[in-house]
Image (cartoon, rainbow over all chains, first blue to last red):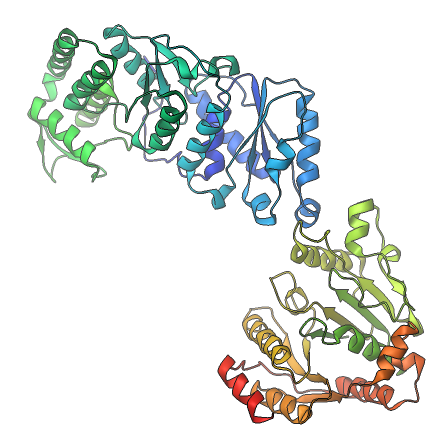
Amino acid sequence: MTSNPSPSNSCRFGGCTLTGALSVTSHVRDAITIVHGPKGCTHHNFSLLHATAMDSRSIRIPEIFSTGLSETEIIFGGEKALDRTLDSVARLDPAAIFVLSSCITETIGDDVQMVCSIPRGVPVIPVPTAGFLGGPFQEGVNNALIALAGMAGSATTDGGVNIIGEKNLEYEVNENFAEIARMLDALGLSVNIRFVHDLDTDRISHLGAARLNILRDPALVPVGVHLFKQFSTPYILSFPAGISGTLSFLKSVAGACGLDCHEVLENEQIRQEEMFCDFADIAGSQVRLDPATTDPDGIRMVSEVADSLKLNITPSGRPVFLPPDLPVGTAGMRRMLHRWRRALNA
Amino acid sequence: MKQIALYGKGGIGKSTTSANLSAALSLQGLDILQIGCDPKRDSTRMLMHGDFIPTVLDLVRERGETSLSITDVVYTGFHGIRCVEAGGPEPGVGCAGRGIIATFQLLEKFGALSGDVIVYDVLGDVVCGGFAMPMREGYAQEIYLVTSGELMSLYAANNICKAIKRLSMRAKSRCRLAGVICNAKNEPREEELVAEFARRVNSALIQFIPRDRIVQIAELNRKTVIEYDPGCPQANRYRELAARVMENTHFTIPTPIEIHDLESLAIEFM
């Protein structure tokens, strides 16, 4: 039983490229990330990452350093400050150093790439971020994943499957991963690496060994395309949502790996039917989504669940919550229905 | 305390005019501070007999702000005029505009912004908020435009009018256009043209300074005209300017004109 608080509307994905990239690089356990900017950029992100990690029952402290820019560096340029910070971080002997830029260093035009190219005995990998100038949160995630993919060598396929771009800041990141791992296991497949969730740099070198990449959601397509070009690994667009979504996900994975999934699909349908039996007590209830959704996948998922449980969706119904990140797989729907039951019985 | 700033196109003679104005004001018995706000740092050179004084930002970079005091940044030149150069980052890096803002904050902290008149000599164009600093936050209240009768020079002056108009809308702003100084190229009808331009932007021509070789000769001798040849007619022009600046009470919010109006104005006086 998870002790996670209920997902709410609080948005953890509203930050800039910097937050997005940090949600990736801070999950490389033996590496250190440097944020080239004023120390507040590091502090606020550190606080968010730390608090989020506690939600996921991880007590690992994110390894993030700041170049601590102030007025003097803004006026005269911050390249020397980055150089100094890189030297002192390199002395800590991490497996790799990731360098993220901020709005201010981009505004004054620091040449981060040049400073990162100076040899220091440790791989130094610049990640294009640049705060608000770099784009939204997701751009930072994608840029970080693509930069990290550069660390992977060529590898022979070992038959596993990569999980690409998990939302490390979402409440149910581990539950969602467990559901995907369960479905892969049912198909006789194993997870190669979680790229990137709580892993060491030496595992990144195995990135190209997978037979298939599963993207967390379609916003990661640029990463999927990049990995396809780099390793010829095909990809699946998204984790599944809903009854039919979960079944077609199993079919797509089996299809991409040349596996027969007949029996697995039957078992999954039985699992879904059993789940709905467990919620027979709320069958026939009147509900309404609060807030309403316009996401076509969300609407499809809700109408399938409503059909199966004979729920009546009406403006006068009791409010039930649909998380902005749709529940993943059959287990996700079960957790959602638990919350709906609590709301209906409240 | 009177705080004035001189703005205008690059190379138009702002530093020469500023230095001669400061020298003339000083000889009236006034306590003068001249601040060069251009990374080129040559505003106060003629007042310092040809020396480039250390700039505030060079000192901050080399020694750190905390170890500096007022005596490190303020230098005394001709007739006791106090001179400061803001300086800037090495060309092509960092943010010079932010450097000007930092310089002002530091001078404020040192209590250096004192005297009877402060003359701010600012670089060619108001390229960003930093170089508009003397007009912001209530530093310079009187802005003088330095221009010749050449179209590009008037164009720059008109642009600065836009900045003054924009900044005069700020809640705490007290900056106003105080007049136009014609630093002439000795073109025909130049004085009339610049006077008409000044009228169109809701201001007035405060002094016409003809082109005179004495300026170059004085500079080769590392002096202002006021110091090198106080008896020459050009020195008299600068003294007149100084007197008019001190008497001036005509401060306005400018009305910048459109580029095609500016062009037809120039054609009118060709």
